[in-house]
Length: 372
Image 1 (cartoon, one colour):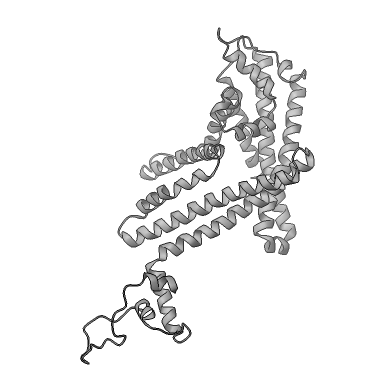
Image 2 (spheres, rainbow, N blue to C red):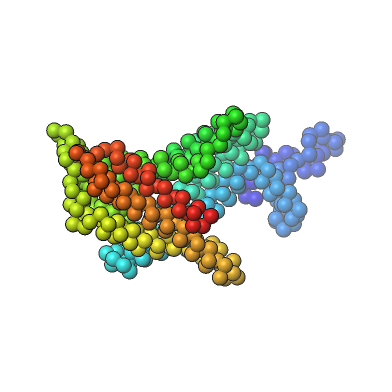
């Protein structure tokens, strides 16, 4: 109410609308804000007037309240989710590797959670506030135009995140942008048939490009993204670097190294078995945490009311994700080994790694085959 009084227009003379000579004034009735500002009274003397004044504030400055409301909700929701998931994942790392102290864990997780909360809270608040303001200022503007302009205004909040995260967002956003543009094109041209498993095809193409970058051009993908793939993947950094050195040798591509040199002396079958086992060991606890923690953090009453059903859903989602990722890294190693052992290339390849990634990404169909 204090800010409403500061923002209200100057109080008009005469609360009852009478002029100094007793004649009835031709002025319009005062608004609740003007009346509230002009009267020297306690707020409890006329609660109905206070309620009307607050309603007028909400109507006049609704865009501010929309922005603040959306910002607080998104900050608490996304920042809290990032906090719970970060604590769980880093806790597993602390227990398993013990290369991270408790203080370092708290500092790292708190910083990441704060950045995530600021990103989604700031973006959501600015977007909702701007969209609501444009709706008041230009009610005839199309929702598409309002949404686009509001998103442009809110997008600088991405700068609160680190460069690697922004790079990763760009990768996912580009893939989704292609999907949206294709769907809009199909909507305008119904004669174009739908692409069966279009999402899966997009995933396969994206995986081909990313696995090519993983093998030969790690400088083109975020460092954190590359580190995750390398930890889950079948080859060490030194083995990958030896492949790059031979691929981009000054005098031309050199002969490929034997498979045993890239698998630590293991045969093709042993290397594939180890890759599948390592992928399962790493991905199972990670996905179990990612699926369980959000349910406990944001749906605890429902989880406690139906614990059996909730745990079955967590386990099913965990198995789906684990089967897909384990199959991906295992298939990649299997195709790579078969290419080296059966085809026996004369020189180190380049685009074969993209082909390996595309074939490995077929593991996404394991989900449909096993879980429907």
